[in-house]
Each structure stands twice: as C-alpha cells, then as structure tokens.
Length: 291
Length: 248
Image (tube, each protein chain N blue to C red):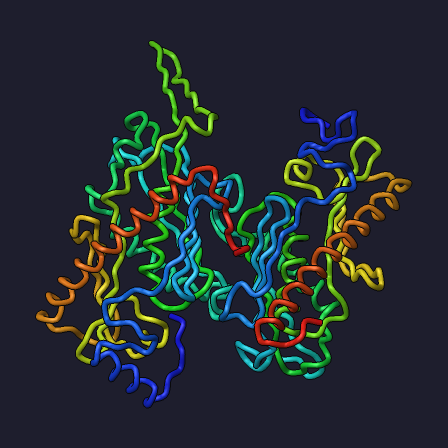
C-alpha cells in the first residue's frame, strides 16, 4: 500500500473530525468524493472505462476472446481479472513492487464476481465444452489517492457495461468441422447486462466510527477495513476484513448495514450516469486524459 | 509490399496522409498531481502516459548512487489491453526491457546529469494504446514530463520514425506500415543543435537511400518539436495566468 507519513497530531485531528461527522475535506462520514467517469475511450478494446475519484485514477480495458471453456464448467464463459499497478502511480510500484497490492485487488474482484447471480456467464458460451467468450478485464492503476478498491470495482463495472461483444454464428453440419462466423459490423454486437453486477464498498474504521471513501490520509489512520461487494439491489456478494486491527461482531453488523445502504446508492447512481452517457451516443466527444 | 498497398499511385498512405505528414499530435502536461512531472501524448492512435519522479535520494541501496552524476532510472511498460492481441505481462518481456534501456540511454544523453550527483530521477512510461511509433511517443511524452518536472535538459528530445516504400520516404509510421516488414528508421534528436541521440534501423535499405530516409525522419523530429514547444508554452502561459503572473 502506498503510505503517507502522518504525525500523531495530524492523526488526532482527522480522528476527532470523524467523531464529529466532519472530515478534513468537509465531507460527512458517509459521503463520497467527486467522481469523473468516461467509457469507451480505448479503441482497441471491447470495452473500456476511465475513473477519476479525487486523486485516484483507474483505467480499465476489457478484451473479449474466443477460447475453450474450462473442463469443469463446460457451459459457461468466464471473466479473467488482471490488475497492474503502474509505476506512474508511485515509484514503489516499479518492477514487481506493485504485485502485492495488485494480487489483493485481483482476488477481491474475482470474489465479488464469483456469485452466479451477478453476471449471466452462461450466455457467453457458444458451444458447450468447445467454445466460449472469455472477458479479460484488465485494471490499470495510474494514480493513488485512497480508496483504490472501490474505484477499481466501479471502473470495472462501467467497462463491462461498455463492453460490446461481436455476434457470432456457429454452424455445424453433419460430420463436418464447426464453422464460425464472427460479425465485423460494429453495430451487430451484444451487450452485457450489468444491472446485478456488484461494486466494492470499503468501510474504514477510524476511532469508534466508520467512514466510506477514505482519502489517503484517512487510510493512514485506519486500523481495520471491511470491504464488501454490494449490488444495486442491496445484496452482498463478498465480504473481506482487511487491516492490522480487529473488529467486534456488533460493529461488523453495523458496518454491513451502512455498506449496503451506501453501496446501493452508488450502484444506482452509476447505472444512471452510464445510461445518460450512452444516450449521448456518437455526439459525445471522448476526452480521455486530454481534459 | 505483400497484400496491402502502403503508398497509392496518387501518393497517399493507408491512413490518408502524404509521405511527409505526421499523425495528429495532441498532448497535455501535468496530468497527475502526485508525480513531480507528468504528461500525456496521443500520436494518432498511439497513446502514452509518462510520469517523472525526482530528483530524489537513490532508492534501493546506496551502492547504486553515482558520485558525479544523477542516476536516470526508466521503466517502460505497456498496458495489457494496449495491443490488438492481449499482452500477458505489462513489462519484463524482452521488448519492454530493450525499450527501457533505449529510453535510459536517450535521456542520459539529454538531462544535465552533472547537476544532481548522488541522486536519482525516475522516468516511468506507460503505453495505453499501441499503434506504431511506441518508442517515439514514449520519448516525446517523457520529454514533456521532464519539462513539467522542471528538470534541466540540454534541449527537447524529439523522436520520429521513417520508412521507405516505393522509392519514397514515409515519416511517422503507424502500426500497419511498421508491421509490413519494410525498412524502419527510428531517430531521436535534439532539434536545436540537430544532434542525434538515438538511432535504430530495422531491415535493409540501400545506402543511396539512407540520407533521404534520415532527412525525412529528422524533419519529422523538427515537426514534433514545434508541436511540443507550442504545448509547453501554452501550458506555462496557462499556469502563469492561474497564479496571476504575466504569461511570458
């Protein structure tokens, strides 16, 4: 994790602020920072999204590839997650320095999307046991400004929403090899239904309170975090406790309640934003990093 | 050339450019707040981000520090989704390691290294989308990032490539032109003094044609320089205006 060094006095200031539901940047404990989201900006991916959450910058690219399904699950396609912490974000990530954080993020994404209800992976299968779509979801962390897990998961969901899979016709005649016809018409595509896909919500325990969307400074004061993957309907698909400190069962229950409520709101807002952006269609100009 | 015609009878290239035309360059300085300097550049469909950290204390053991000059540390990596076919690893493969080395040599020759003995400057380059001219875009982005970080340079370093098709030299090759297997000459220059700090050529070329191709590439570098210089001046002007100063 990228750490900032804080003195005891600075930490006390942050903790006292949180006690009074008034954080160092003026937010309340359950408030998110400003988000800036853009989809469909990388032309050689099937779907992409860029998310900027204050100082945190994430770029996600999804590539759809035709492969053989796993032998133990012959009837479903699959998602493969990969996280890369770019050295652009912090010099410590140079070489293999970012791998620990990347693995942690990767595992959480796999866990969040492991529930069968979140995404209809069976529709990604074209021919049982022989051919299916594999969606390679590649997350690139470009700048760290706290709350990386939430930001990454939101960007992933947005990129999946943006993903366009070309339609494929499979023809099989008696005794012959199967023939594939992948459409090259950019409008003859299939979209994924991401309405039940989760986003991660991290609750950081600071003092006796818990906050959402911790900044980097606040993360330095936090002893334990509860990360959960919440869907738009408010169901939780994964939960992970992380950090050096410990949590008692009562506070976990309480945090879960807050997490569900805020997570639901985040998901609703996200879908709304994505649909709004979609409606602009071709008139929308992609800005990317040129802002 | 097999299959595709890289230069039409009318003198147009596949993407509609004339032989001497660069792809559209768009760039921005100061993309990130945490890095000491950062820049983003788009050359056609090639998109590159660069970040500069330092000069700072040498990381990873004091043994690496040099007593008379700064350590220039580079890393080149490509996003796994940057290429047509998905890459398995963002860095560490032979190609990226070679790129890292080339960047290091290029900037070692350009940064006024003697000003910061016993220190280190990090240059991190991330290719977000690759469509030919990755080295050139990386160098141009890194130059902008170094300028944004305020690190003293001898001059801008501008890179450009040139190829040779149907007796004509083509500047700033895109991916399709690069992968057709013809000649490609990559050059990085210091535009003011017209010094070449990096040169690489793939495939064979008749000696008689070398100077034509080289001139085209050097002219490309000069064109790149003009674009970069305008971007830097605009950026400095905006920053100066924002803090209430007088734009120079």
